Every structure is written in structure tokens, then in C-alpha cells.
Image 1 (cartoon, helix red, strand yellow):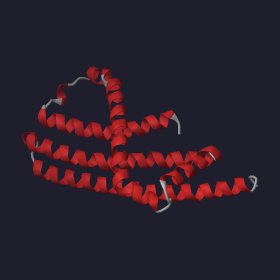
Image 2 (cartoon, one colour; image 1 turned 45 degrees about the vertical axis):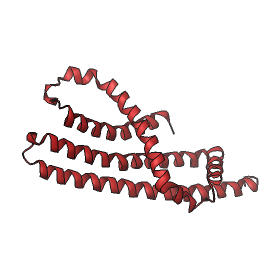
Image 3 (cartoon, rainbow, N blue to C red; image 1 turned 60 degrees about the vertical axis):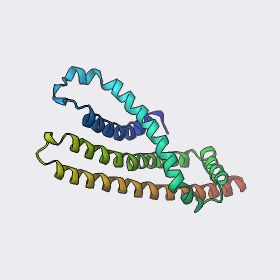
Image 4 (cartoon, rainbow, N blue to C red; image 1 turned 90 degrees about the horizontal axis):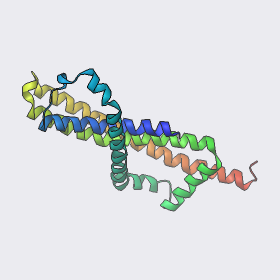
Length: 191
């Protein structure tokens, strides 16, 4: 996986964190976005992108730990007897097949994005509702916005979770099967 791909992946994850942080800040601090001019927006773009990148790293690590604890280990156990077997199979692919390794890393990228958005969309939902409750005077129909926004966030979160789960299950199966294939090929002298 290229550095650029990893950077973009963490920006995509970090953007979801940035959304709920802005909503929380807007709810408790309040700010008028109409007062921002283009010069300020342009000059703050790079620092904001850096913050979003760091938020993506933090969110990815947090989501990884949570998802592994509650769902990932049981999914892995469907295909591998223990974690050592999983890492050996993965190492076999990474060392012995650059083409399969690239496909594996692409799948991991999609998995991380889904995992991050599954978690952060729930926080966006919470932040949106707090924002609408605290700043209801800004909207003609805050209750309707809250209901539709919550529904959209929940559907996105559930969809991202199901996608993560399916991608994870497929990844484990592919790692197991591809590693076995590579081991068989290497055992036969690569023929």
C-alpha cells in the first residue's frame, strides 16, 4: 500500500471525527460560519488537514481495539486456530506474493474506513442531536432534522458495520486460502 493511499484513508476516517467535533463545538461554544472569509479558509486548510489526519490515526486505533474486542477475534477464530497462525499466513502472503499482498492491503484499507465510519457515525448522530437541542433557534424544524439526521446516521453506521464485518470475514478466508495455496506452491518448488 502506498503512503498516499494510507494518508487518504486516514483523512477519510479523520473527516468523520472532525464532523462530530465541529458539531459538539457548535453546540457548546457556538460560532458563525458566515463570518469566515475565503482567505481564512484557505490559510487554515493545511493545518486543518493535519488535524484531520491525526484524528484519523487516533480514531482508527480506537476503532480497531473496540471492534477486535467485540467482534474481530470471533471472526478470526472461524478461520484460524490462534493469532499466531493468522500472522504466519499473512506473513506468507506479504513475503511470497506481491500481487496478493497488494490486494490484501487494498481490502484492509476498505475495512479500516468502514470500521472508522461505523464508530464515528454514531458519534455524529449524538453530536448532531446535541447541536440541534442546544441551537434549535437556528432551524425552522429542528425535531424533523434530528429525526432524519439520526435515521441517516444510524443507517450509515449499521451499513458500515455490516460492510466491515463482511470485509473482515472475506479477508480472513482469503488469507487462509491464499496462504495455503502459496505454501503448496512453494512446497512443490514453485511449479
